[in-house]
Image (cartoon, rainbow, N blue to C red; front, top):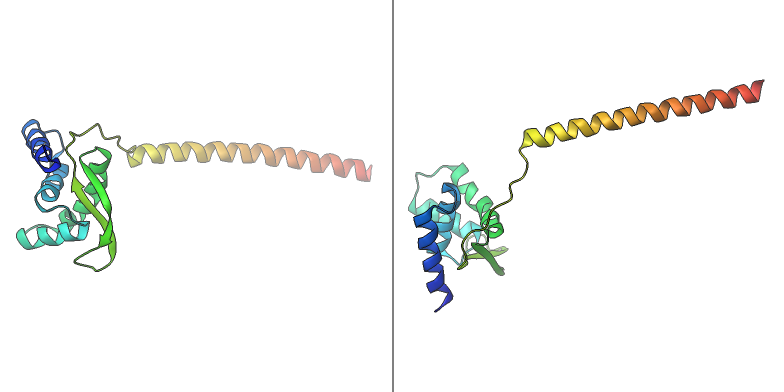
Length: 146
């Protein structure tokens, strides 16, 4: 059985069982139908065939490719010159695998909370060091001028 044949089976199962979020599946479907391709080639093809798509949707295609790679359903074939830009770009294609759980980044609010906590800890440590320094300077001055 060829890789493309097993990719067909994986595609059908992913679609039937809803194994990817809707945006990831749309990107996967575009890559499946038009890959191997660079992100820019996929975006250009989508613009031509679905002109009603928004810029943010088209931009999300490139972002979803790395997420699909992390889930094991897309892979980087290597680098080549993009047919659209002429620049060297990553060529992507689907795999024959089913998706694995994608580890999401902590939400921005959670990262912000942790950063604020860390800053407060640094401020406390800085104040403590400043007090120790001032105490040492005072002791030195007393010894020098006593």
